[in-house]
Image (cartoon, rainbow, N blue to C red; front, side, top):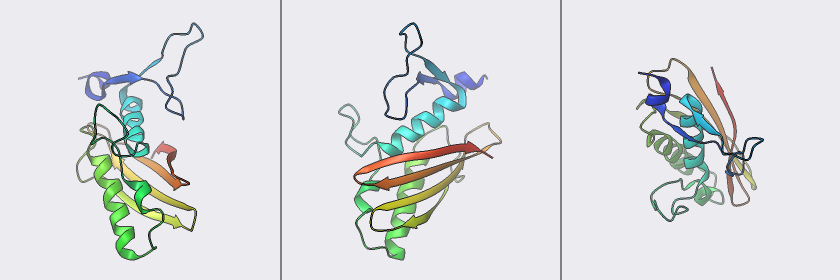
Length: 142
């Protein structure tokens, strides 16, 4: 089975989730692991209810930004990130680990690690939540 058939393909988007265009003006398609990672990043960055055609798609990360920084709230955030990533069928169940790296009055930073099916790499996403936005800052394979 090829990685394209395993991970699918999608229209490539930029950091603002706008379609990337080639020099000729055509949309660029992303495939393989990059398609899976792009979809996972979109799910993390999209608030639940943000897609009119899929009300359950997205995350509730923005909800906790202004909560009190307690161990209970940190655990809720970690569980939210882990469950959002595990919703993607290309992610190995049980491979997701997240932790709150920093949290001040303006920004929350979460680090995640996970594996994709049929892939030996561990992927790392760093998520920043702040000022009513959620952004995936980095993704690298280890």
